[in-house]
Length: 104
Image 1 (cartoon, helix red, strand yellow):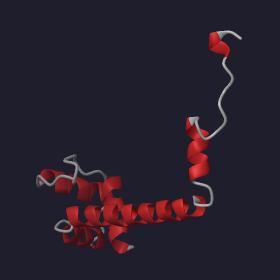
Image 2 (cartoon, rainbow, N blue to C red; image 1 turned 30 degrees about the horizontal axis):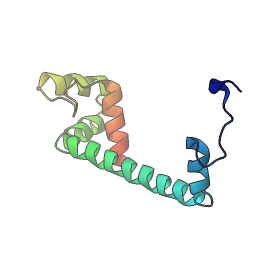
Image 3 (cartoon, one colour; image 1 turned 180 degrees about the vertical axis):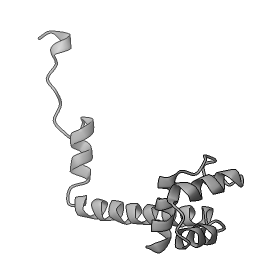
């Protein structure tokens, strides 16, 4: 037999089969842990986003209740020097998302 044509050893000596054999019966536990982690991440991101615009929320709500358009609110906030949590200018869609997030 040629040296580069050696037969493959049986699992679990080869990467993936060994990993699968070692995880047998635990897939549901692993998936449950992933679901919990995703939920915690979603909650943390939402809280961070709300905290970033908490000081501007009364202004946004007041202007929106007064009948101002989302674009007008964004323009007003940009003119006053306010920025999003990432340092960008406000847009109409950003205002809408912030108001929707705070309402939920």
